[in-house]
Image (cartoon, rainbow, N blue to C red):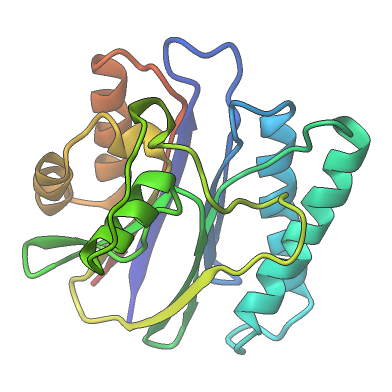
Length: 237
């Protein structure tokens, strides 16, 4: 099945530094978004190392071959954690990481943090990942009937990230790609400022992944550009 890809990151209009990173590697068919945690030092270095180590791991494996995604996540986390011990011994450093690896018609998605993977199929947009935030975790507990309280100022705090002390457990899922599927990997600089219904419409109307990616980033900036924004798009024909 043929596909087209495009990726772009933008500093936005308010932040002094772009702490997002991405990977868009068609030869290895691996794609990633990493968002350095702004509340910690050296977020940009954390996200850069996360995608660099991912690319190094993919280069060690035959193209088109499966890998151990949880072990890959653990190796990336260990490298970023050790870098944090050097750059910020007191606080550490951290990043989100959401990456997709295409093998035939199977898209393997590995995820930690609050970046996300989205799929448009038959004109319906679906989020394929779950945010690892306090708000999301408490919502799940509430669905199980547990009574939980939530302070608004803490609702977006991450419960898991790349760079945390090991062990780190991520979410690893596998999806069958169908003709005309469209996938996005996004940092929260997109999803916090562009509603899901708007993303759905933009991706559906886009003639190619570059158009969708650039439009999403433009919309985030038009709404203040308060965060870095990064998108990787995959359109299957």
